Each structure stands twice: as C-alpha cells, then as structure tokens.
Length: 249
Image 1: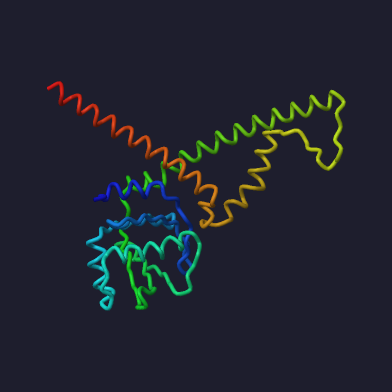
Image 2 (image 1 turned 120 degrees about the vertical axis):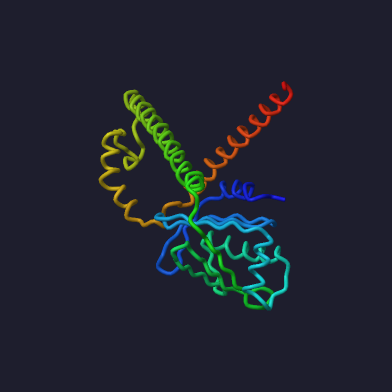
C-alpha cells in the first residue's frame, strides 16, 4: 500500500496550476491514488494541505452523501475526474467549487453528481508544515531561477556569436535581400535596462494567477523530477551504508 510519504513524493512532481474560487486566486496541486489523495493549495500568503487515505475518504463520503453507497475508490475516481479538469482550466457547468477561510485552515467545497445523484465533498485543509512548503514551493522556485539564469546566459552567448557571424558576412560583402530583416547588434546591458523598465512592470502587473504559466509548469516538473531522482539516490545510498554497517558488526 502506498503510504502518505510516497503519496507526497508523487505530488512533488505535479505542477502548480492557477485556480479561481469567487474573487480569490489560488495555486494548487493534487495527487490521487487508489489509496487516497493529497492536496496542496496556496494564495501566496499561506499554504494549506490535506492528506486523506481511502478509509477517511469512505467515512467522509458516508457523512456527506448518505444516498450514495459506493466504494471509496469510486469516490476517489470521481474526485480525480473533478479536480484534474479544474486544474487544467476546464470548468464543468454541472460542478461548482467554493472555499471558506477559517482560523484553523481552509475548506474547499465541491458540489457535483455521481451515478445520477447529488455528490458533495469537502476538502479540510490545515496549514502546511514548513518543510512541505520548502519542498514543494521554495526550493523548486530557487532551482527554477538558477535554471532560467543559465538559460539566459546561454542565449546571450548565442546571440553574440550570431552577431559576430553576421558581421563577418557583412565584411565579406554579403547583403540582405530584404532590408526589413536587418537587426541591430545585441547589447546585453541595453537589453537588461529595457527589460527592467518595460517588460518587468508588465509581468509584475499580470497578477498572481500567472505565476505558473504552461512553460513554467514544464520547468517546475523537470526540476522536481530531478529533485525526486536525487532523493531516491540519497535513499539508496543510505540503505547501502546501513547494509554495510550491519555486515561489519
């Protein structure tokens, strides 16, 4: 059976998605398995989560849906079919979501249908532990920043090489067949100044919902997959070390 630690490890490589409930915008990610689910959600001021196993899902489903008598796996499959389209930006007219803040956390209410009957679900999210916040948000964002810096440096280097190549063609007597294709030599300092003055204000004014656009979701997944791979290596190395220690006793 997949435990809560394995479930959170699977959640790690799921990208954040922007969702909107009423007037509030959130970032959320979720992972469903036959053994349960784990949900992580943030308004960029706080981070909440809920982890529930199949037994807890079955118990809550009986309390909320007294007319439905189906196995917990059916509820999990239904929740998956409702949440995954939501995170993909595909809204279902027959399903409604709402959220409520409280002193103890955040509740996400779902109203839909299952087997032709009304289906209700409440996610009861409590504040996420700091380690969870760092693992799923802070560390990946720092790694993404480093990756994007390396990407910019490589692109800058490539542009300078292209400019040198074009200049060599010009000195050899080559001319453009279409003058509209002519470009000015790339100046890194000028580019940075224009970016800070013009592009950056537009990015910062786009709103929190743009925090993880599709390209950044792909980068986040790639970064967290590397993190998960390194964690497995550390785990395996630790087991080998313990195994060697046992053998030498």
